[in-house]
Length: 424
Ligand code: AMP
Image 1: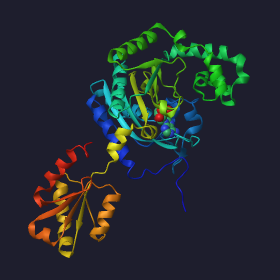
Image 2 (image 1 turned 135 degrees about the vertical axis):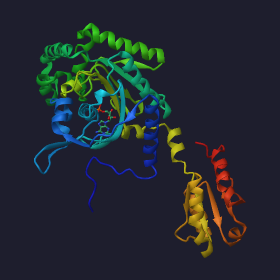
Image 3 (image 1 turned 45 degrees about the vertical axis):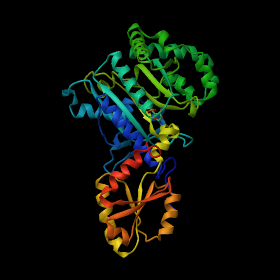
Image 4 (image 1 turned 90 degrees about the vertical axis):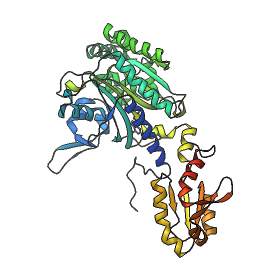
């Protein structure tokens, strides 16, 4: 038996409906905030991620799916979405459009991570980017759209962690301050962090190894080293959030695993997934597009991890999506078999989800199945019904059976599912 590659998953029915529903909410909310969808390739030139995500990050250093194509060009399955959006912005001359440009995306990302709880090698992200505005108001808007998305799904326990990563000039000073502070404790760091101490000490703050976290807890905070401009910027973002009643905490150790962020960075933590499990990460990236060879144009955005989101989806949303509300149409006899698909098609056209019994189950077996699989109602079409131009419908929760004229069935159905039991 050929098995799926490690770290990948098959999304099966009915759970896949949760994915569709979550993606539907993302499209609704982000387009209501003025964003349009962008779809970029799943693979890109390797160089794009090396230059944007950063050579010394874990992602580029050890997690990319990189391969030569048949002509020897180095390609990489995208490990994240922002770099591709930035490249597309430059390549397609989107600078000509009115700014800021609000773009959202959803789709699979690939990282060669240790496959474990909540970590996959193919996972999905839903992201929003606002390109062409450098104001704290733009950051706050992005956070407001994100917060609105989580609210629509019924989340009420998420915590937004926020930090100031400073400007790139501040970063150089901060790297030095970290190196000086952490060098005497080099031996307490894991082997990765010993390397990071030389290459990119910021990444030590991100390490999940407990001894490294203990060392990091004593390190200086970026905000103490950062210049006035970035400090004011993040303070103003916080003021906007407070005005909107969006709760957040300042987390001075928050650095994010990608090099392109500056000033505002944030993460959303779900208490249900545990202290270290991040549902969403984002921040400001004002130099990214210029670093990739485009004009100096600022941006801010985030990416939500859809796999983890689905895991902790609030029960009410989950149940409403999974509740099956199809009509089961059962033909009884050859004459009914001849009519049943046409009938189903006419109802489908009026918005009734109809599942036709095509396997020739007896009425008894069909009713048993309807019960077992939680159908809302069964419509039976036999010879008497054909003559009368009606169907006998049994509502399964109430156990009642009535005769409904074929043309009146859609109206009857819509009233039924709008009622208290089937409402969602
Ligand atoms: P990042 O692009 O690293 O900022 O990640 C953004 C979000 O994507 C994280 O908060 C996670 O929810 C999700 N994510 C990142 N890597 C993985 C993975 N390997 N498996 C599942 N979700 C992931």
